[in-house]
Amino acid sequence: MPTQDLSHLLPWLTDRPPGYDRVLDAFEAAVVEHGIQRASFARIAAAGGFHRSLVQHHFKTREGLLRAALDRVAERYHARLELIRSEAPPGARLDAILSWMFAPLGDGGPPRIARVVDAAVAVAGSVPEARTALARLYERFVVEIVAELEILRPKADGVAVSDAATQIVALSYGRAGLDTLALRARSPGASRGLCDLLIRGL
Image 1: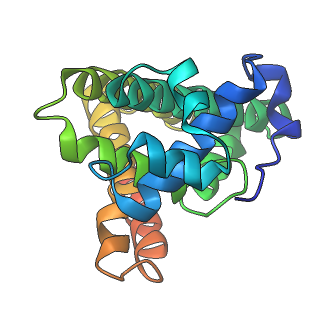
Image 2: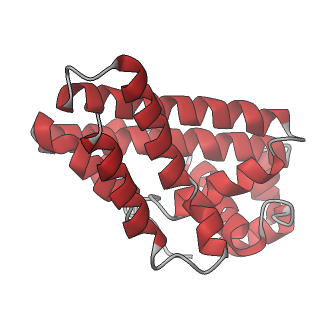
């Protein structure tokens, strides 16, 4: 499993024990390959090339592992936004954020994030931890997009801005289901185009 290069995001990432992130990396890989229901501790260990006791050392349950993975998704998303904010002028930030959200990246970005989120959605009805973590994750994404839309369209109606932000997040993180249907080559560009239409309509 290739190591993700996160050096550019380090100022905004929590410093954790190396084994913790190794387990989460392996969990994401196992979820992408086998789905959340079949991502057993044994398969996670196999994906990461380590003994399953490392998984058990950091996480007691798959639900706790899923919650930690979603929390890390939120942290990396926030780190990416902070990096964009430090590099792009205010008027260009939203475009840079959308370019990241709709393109595969080596720092755990879409579509890998979308696949992990999609797996969590699949079990949210029966796993309260997943439902709670997803609600926090989506809310954080929407708040960040609202902030950028308000800079870009300061006179736009607040409800319309909130609705547009929610739809942008849904378009981005709904892509995993399209990937499953072998539409991955077309869906990112089409979804990004819809985002641009939403923004122009504000």
